[in-house]
View 1 (cartoon, rainbow, N blue to C red):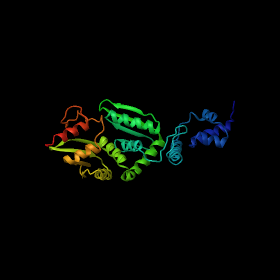
View 2: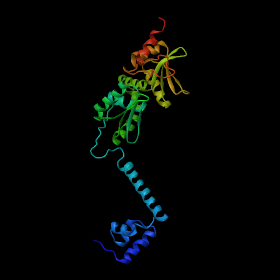
View 3: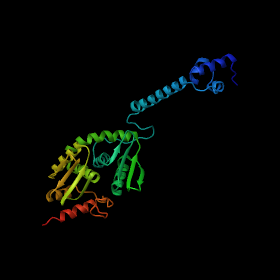
View 4: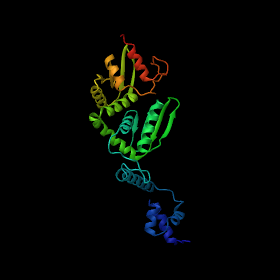
Length: 285
């Protein structure tokens, strides 16, 4: 058992009163932590000591943050390897687009929210196929919104990077890939119906650059649209444009409207593609 001389004990107590930590006292006296604690445990923390401890905690926190940002940036912990495809293909465009529109990409997670079980299943299936990852799932019973999330630093960093690349790549991509991008946008951000007796397809997005990109891609298929900067939306109207939209893009099967909305004129569960078909058929021949 370690025995401490009376003079050393008194020195430990004096150093503690002066605001030194156990580690600092140990370095000065060459006495083990546990032994020092037994001699100074009844001495209240001084204001100087409290400040000293807080400063060390802040310093340690900053060191950990620096390690995560600089050393582990874009990397998972050992044993959690995520594939990172270099070339663009349909499933990858589908995933990145959905995470951009109705999802959330943070520094450590990729999250996708939607009321449509068909879209949730679609993203989950594509994630398994491309990245071999299983999601965390959650259902908000109050709103009926499903959420799937993937908590991988390496995946989040990769999707963030690809989401920026996609906005440039998609402009020169094949028609098939452009359609996948457009369908993801309107499935997540779009709706269709009657507004002031006008038959419309609308898509909402806060980022004006994305609306301009969607407008440009629609134009590639001969679909005319207008951007309303006030309401942050793109609008497709007129039978000719609606028919082209239906034939080229359309809404995915299983994507329904929310019949519980107060402003809903349908008051029942209908697929968006079914509503679009009804609107087009309502034009006088």
